[in-house]
Length: 293
Image 1 (cartoon, rainbow, N blue to C red):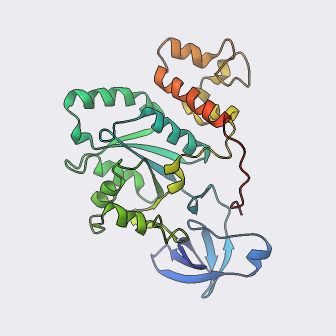
Image 2 (tube, rainbow, N blue to C red):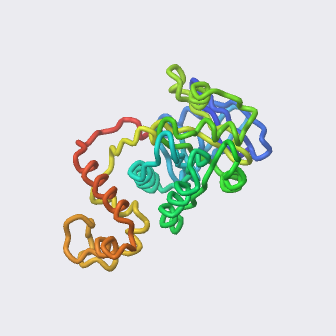
Image 3 (cartoon, rainbow, N blue to C red):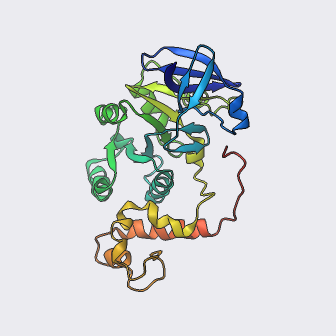
């Protein structure tokens, strides 16, 4: 009996990698179908020469792509071209927190900013650094490379970020042997038109990387607006001081979060983004998924 991680799924065949980096192409036992167990890329499994024998419990899982046991999400957001968006950042962070995954903020293209602009961005992100790891990256100056290599080591990492944020440049800088154009990287990571059923995690420094079109689309399906407060760690830390136990930090009186916004201890923009996301989720009609097995 061997133990390893599923790193690839193509046409019902699973590639499992053991701790010595040896890879095996396997099929799951037929009994899994009867138990409604569908192995995913990222699963830790026991296997023999031909079959996956056991799937261990998952600490988390995503649905687009179907991947489990993700350690952290690299939120790649551009400092310029396109301009940095704190609303997009706060959306990504809330969504990632909801999946019980650690987010890492990576501000790319910092070489496009002058000193004053970069100082301003660093000042605004200083608040976030109390709750999240923040890395400033440039493919030109190689700023942030060592930090990214260190923080992704021995972890399963996922990429998230809007189009044009510099995800492909980050991949190429960390793994120069890729030497791929943006569209080629998207295809290699399972986002091509004809590869939507091909899920794979790739070596990334001393860890692994996977792309997530689900995060990139920022769809808040299956979310409840009154649960959003739990996905803001900075809000959650102070919510016990709110007058009402189930305070949503929107309309309730004697709300500690609104008080901290008024005193400047919580950035006004972050709170406004919270309200925007809250209302966006509230307006979404429920969608009943079929892909949760």
